[in-house]
Length: 404
View 1 (cartoon, rainbow, N blue to C red):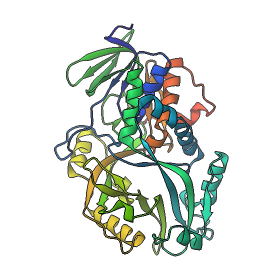
View 2 (view 1 turned 180 degrees about the vertical axis):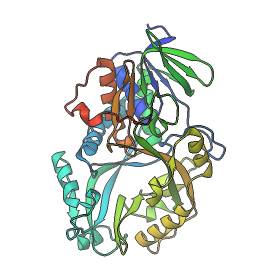
View 3 (view 1 turned 90 degrees about the vertical axis):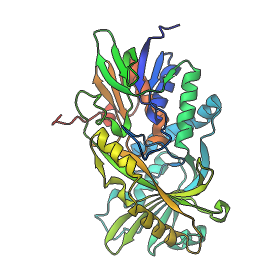
View 4 (view 1 turned 120 degrees about the vertical axis):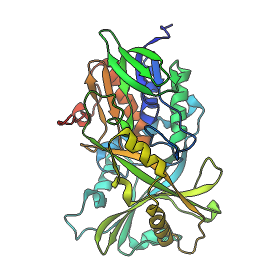
């Protein structure tokens, strides 16, 4: 039995990456402390940082750019059955993942996200079946939906919707069942001593560990816990929830809609099939074009953004998109929810050393579907002290701000 005041590893952050890292560290036999606040009951009076996983549905699929992102997701998805069995938590539901995008064969300068052949090659490399649908096939396969002319479809029929809250619950259940200690508090200081890392929390408690893992997500620079800032940008994103009176009346997949308009190529939105939320109601979730419009730098700026509840103009944009996709369907009231996302300088996760005793692990927008694998990589790197995976470590090296 280990000293209850000292651990092999302290994981700062109890979201998807922190929970997954802790779970894999306990699987390696480490004594693990996880410190992170629980989800707040409300956001209109919020102070401090905010997590991005307070939601009911995220896509888990391979229709991603670049290939590394799809590979991380595939590795995670393959372990979902084991995590479900170990935790007793059901956190996935089957869905079609549909990527709708314009035919850009005549646009050689089109962004890589609009390159359907690249997305198909990625899926083929991973052995995942993806169907290509021409404009007529897209219309006949999803007759309830209406898309702008000149658009094509890619569909992965064995994709999943992952409930982020339940994924975190599953990871934490597996970790604590294996001996990890979960403390619902917020770390205010991390300092390195000669023989340990010392953590101090808002409650005044202190904890010691041989090593620490910083899994603080979009708030990593804002927490003040790092000695110098990372090259990353944090944004206040908006989720629009549009109520559905009868979810059985709407037959639609989860989708990414990349549109061609008179103004050029655009990001139409991520639209989730109807999901039941904690209030018992069913909503279609839309994440629209404003996802990177609200840069945030400090904890106060994050808190102020959260208190707004999100960008209210997104409601009109979401309704317009759903009116186009689902003509003739009755939709109920809409409301916004605040979210935070980040983008790294590489567009890929950071899994790297901060110093001799501390590891940083961050993923920006796709951390839910890839969390279990990113957590495994971070756990292996932390416990062994060396990089052991077939993906070169250079892919995940952290970039540090020169100005910091």
